[in-house]
Each structure stands twice: as C-alpha cells, then as structure tokens.
Length: 130
Image 1 (spheres, helix red, strand yellow):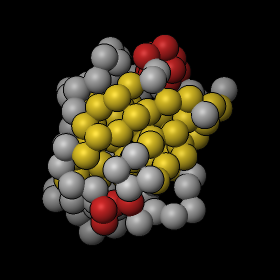
Image 2 (cartoon, rainbow, N blue to C red):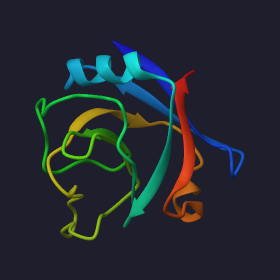
Image 3 (tube, rainbow, N blue to C red):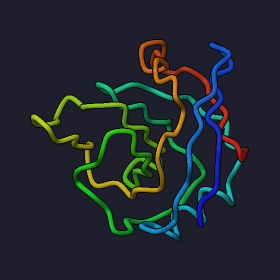
Image 4 (cartoon, helix red, strand yellow):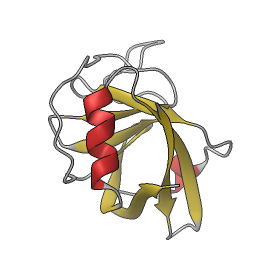
C-alpha cells in the first residue's frame, strides 16, 4: 500500500510530499498513519531532518543501518520521523548512515529539495495526510 502524506513547514510556506510505502515496514507505516496529524519540531543533523519525539510507537521492523538518498524512515530509538536529503555526520563515502537503525517507511517525492538549507533546529512542522 502506498499513501501520500505532507510535511508542512508553515514558517517557510513550503510543503514536502512523502510517499509512504508499507512494503518494508508495514506495522510502522500503519502506526504513523494512525497518529496523523502530528505537530512537532524538526531538527537537522548533517543532511538529515528528524523530528522531536512523536506519539508514534513502533519497534525496529526490518531496520536498516544504511539508507538511500531521499528515504523517509522512522527512528525507533527516538520515536522520530527522519527525512534523508544526504549524508549525516557519521556517514561514510557513498553511504548514508543514520544514528542507529531505522525503519524505512517511504520516500521524499517533492521536486524542490531546498528545504534542507532553510531548516534550523526546532523548526515547527505539521505532518498530515494529503
């Protein structure tokens, strides 16, 4: 099942579109959808955006220690949604490495990916169904 959601950055009047895909982490995707909408702060770690703790509760589910460019994941250790625009401070050449294993839940499908340059820690976002 694929489902579109939005991450709304009202401070910048911008929206990031995400296609959730439950093929790798179906329980996690279900938990995300059941908890929307969520209003939360988002932070930056290298080229990764991650939310503060959310009400989403999910355990590791086919968790990955390496992700692909534009992946969207859930970080069980921090109850956070993560958007990977590029490398993190612990990434290796050609490999995007999250802080600890994450459940892949979808992909960023927005064409304009300049939001990473605008976000500062504690930027407020609204995550909702499209």
